[in-house]
Structures are given as C-alpha cells and as structure tokens.
Image (cartoon, rainbow, N blue to C red):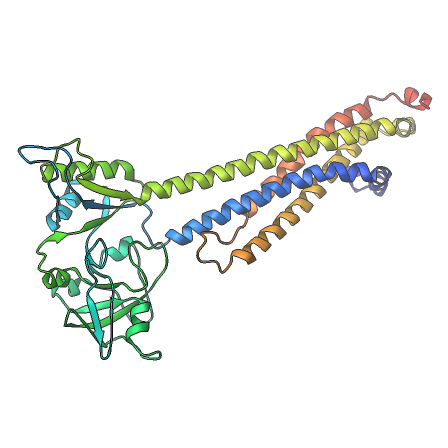
Length: 421
C-alpha cells in the first residue's frame, strides 16, 4: 500500500492522463453525465415528494368522504331512485362496527351543492359565503390553521349550541376594516348574531372550503335549518396501517344494510377515497425514484466501462514503459495498483463533478419553485446517504473495471515489452 502515498506513483498517473487529455476528458464525461442524471432525477423526485407532502400535510392521508345519493336497484319493496339520507346515527354505527376508523366527522353545508349561501351582515357591509356545520373532530381530519388570538370550534360550542363562528380571510377583508381585529366581534348570519372566535388561514387543497368559508357548531347549524339529525356527508379517517380501499367498501356495505339498499347497488352512496389517490401519488413518486436509480446507475456503468477501455488503450501504448519498470524491479502488485489507482481516481473525480453539477441544477430549480404555491413541488434535494452510496458504488465499479487493464499490464513480460518498437 506504500505506493499509494508514493509521489512517483502520482506523477506517473498524472503523466498518463496528460498524454491522452482529450481522450480522457471525453471518457470521463460519460461518468459525469451518469452521476448528474442520477442526482438530478433523484432530487427532482424528492422535490415532488416534498411538494405532495406540503399539499396534503394538513389532511389525513388515509381518509375518505362518503355521501348519500339515489338507489339504482329496487329492493325489499322500495322502488328505484329512492333518495338516501345520512344521519348522525350512521356515524355512531360506523364507528362502532369498524374499529379501523380513527375519526369520523358528520358535516353539513350551505353554499355548495345547489344550496344558497346564507347572507352575512356587519354594519353597512354584507356578503354571501359558504357555511359549514361541523364537529371539532373535523380539525383532526383536515386541520385548519387559525391565526394567533383565535381558536377553532370546541366540544362545548356543539354541546351548548353556541352562536360562534370561525371565518375565512375573505370574510374578514370584506366585512371588517383593514386594521380591525374581528375576534370577539359579531356578525349577523340569517339575521342571527354570531361571535367571531377565530380566523383560519386558507390553503388550497383543503377540501370544499375556499377563502370565504365559515364554520359554526354542528348543533347550531342543525337548529338554524331545522335539520334534526340529517347529515350531508361524512369525512372519515382510518388509522395509518388500514387498507383504506377495503374500509371504503366495508363502510358502504354497512350503510346499504342499514338503509335497506341492494348489496349490488353502487349508486346509493357516493364516495371519494383520498387515501387511494394519495397512495397512487406515492407510487408514482417511488416509480420516479426507481427510474432515476436505474438510469443513473446504467449511465454511470457505461461511463466506467469507457474508463476501462481508455485504460486498456493506455496500457497498450505504455507497453515498453511498463516493461522497463518491471525490468528495474517493479513488482506485479505495484503495476496493478497504479492502474487500479488511476481507474478509481478518474471515476471519483468524474463522480464529484457530476454531483456538483447536479446540485447546482437542483439549487436553480429550487429557487425557481420556492414561492410557487400553486405547484406541488418544493426543496428538491438528494439525501446525503444516497450521495455517499453513489460514490461508494463508483469506487467499487472503478476498482472492478480497473482490474481488466491492470491484469493486462501485469501479464506483460519485461523481455517482450523491451523488444516492442
């Protein structure tokens, strides 16, 4: 191993590379390109992962929405087209029969699905905004970020049918003065006074809400519109390890049984499985990661093979030189070590250049997408273990591919090398 720290060894390696500068540069480009592709694609895939996590960070990933529609198959004396209606008792039954359910939130709304938005008045200002009747548990499924000084709905609000409201930023902007704090102030909704207890920060991808939505206690909403125990839809979150697709089927089966719907009727209850969609996104992201790995390693391998070829040519051109070294007492291990060292050196240098170029490209992409909230992409980076792993693989490949020209150099007999012109 002494030859590694021998100055003459490195001078010989430098001299060899210098004699074939153009050929060496062209060959090294293959490894540089392979590492660059690997870093760029891996970083891009990570940026997508981060973007999707950012978009869905406030929503339970293993969640779904279930609502009532109309029957499409007659059953037990009921005609086709019977309108279904979800009720609070359904939520209790689902929670009781399906231990896979972590949270279930009955919801009602005005301002979507054809129902008119309630008029909201404050002083001389007024507007129409969508309004949700909710239980506090909805915040465990789709979290609402509340600005400092305010709060979301709580259990006492529902228990005592309090007339409190959480408003969106557009409601604040249109009904209150610019520097006015709405917390503790009152607004009229359907001619009933409600106290503002919170203002939520609107972010896209949070469900049916927009920046002008309002949230009041579920019980208060039911009393206002005389809905009794009627529910528009359920927001349901399963535990992280639950098969959300199977849970969706089981929930619909239970609802069909409770409401006397034909088991094969797929239209009586509608649903949207957010967990299934999220799983598809994760699968797509994993596919991109795998593609970057395959393409990157394949390109790196091609570049390393090219380095092996250039070293074979170099060994052939240096036959006489190697023969002289052998004749002067150089051992086969020293000759082999020099060729291997040259191979590993070229591979590592090319790899580092590729990593630096890839990191620069990812930095540029990050700057271009940093403030783009409408596009699910953020912070494209490559984990350090991946980079170290890539360098480790390159060292191994450089060593293995260097064995071929190294063995070729060792096999040269000094007498034959000295005879070569």
